[in-house]
Image (cartoon, rainbow, N blue to C red; front, side, top):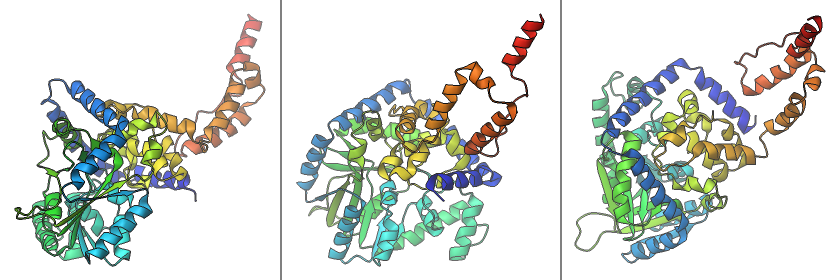
Amino acid sequence: MNAHRQFIQASKKKAFDIEHRNKLKYNISQYEKSFKKGLSNYDNIELAKEFISTTKGRAVENLSELLIRFENNIASRGTHVIWAFDKKEALSEIDKILQKHQVKMVVKSKSMISEELDLNHFLEKKGVEPVETDLGEFIVQLEDEPPYHILTPAMHKSKEDVAKLFHHNFGTPPNETPEKLTAFTRKKIREKYVNAGAGITGANFLVADIGAVALTENEGNGIMSLAFPKVHIVIAGIEKVIATTSELGKVWPVLAQYGTGQQLTVYNSLITGPRCVDEMDGPEHMYVILLDNKRSVLYQPEPQKKALECIRCGACLNACPIYKNIGGHAYKTPYTGPIGSVISPIYRGTNFDHLATACTLCGRCTEVCPAKIPLHELILYNRQMSKKYKWHFFLKIFRLIASDQNKLDMFNSWFKNIIFKLGIYSWGRHRIMPKFEKQTFSIYWKKRLKHN
């Protein structure tokens, strides 16, 4: 079964799973309440979005210059900066670091780029235990699932689901409360921080002017993932760079607003290098891996280049009518929803071209994007560029026939019903197509005029 057919089957399964849709609907509704409440903190949210768009747009235009500035500044304080061309090279470099420091267990803060690298499975094959420290990531790791959402990994699970999962894995009471399960997880993971040989984090932003890694989080697990272990490894896409700390101060609140509806996330950290002589905690060794992995390919075509300005807030997923029905796992890619439909065919190859069809072109994603990325237009562009977009041939034939009434009248209703029925199967077997009448309106009208 090809990737497109797998996507259709997985989407159908989730779309008709009422329990799944109710969980997703409830969790997104909670986000929407917080989001709407948070908007009241802004006198002019469009002005804030314009700032994000300008800031990220300027950073993308000056990408190489800012990356070199970032490297020079952070390297001057003892951080090792490694440039990785693709997934294979990044994993190889991580393996070298872990072998050098004889690491057998790593603690990881939430990071979509580690999902892009399929890092956990790689570490397990190398005999290294990966421990997810974000509560949502910890839950999906127990279930051996990928994250369901860019920002909320366990959005598809109810508190009852989580209680059953913990009962199965740890023997906690089957109806335990979320508060007690959180306390249980906190205690369990804190033991891992002390014993881990390395901590691995992503980066929300790379700040060029001071050479710093910016992390924003709500649980404090990111800070502890780099404070306790002797080795800190940062994996960041090259598009994460911004120019100045001044810009960061204005970007962080907007990321919080569009990500969770908060004024500001609870923990915001700037990591400028390994532990200094007079510091009590922090890593002894720090590595920053700057990952390309097809981002430079995305940089080439002018329309799609805008996607590099994404700040990974996840707002487009929460607004998308397709995502709201099928959820995240049907996409079979770390980056889901509208932004995933734009970048996945570039990052992961033409097997993901079909994601361009997972869009109603309603424009809601574009409307909510804080970086003002025209997401629905980029998805449409992907459709037009995809060699596998099967409707091109059909539409040409349809236009040829439908543009001439005499050609339309050449085919009887039986033939038209068969053709359109086949077409509907490509759109989904649950749609109902009205049947063509035996007599076309044009013939009926000609007869009527003749009689009159």
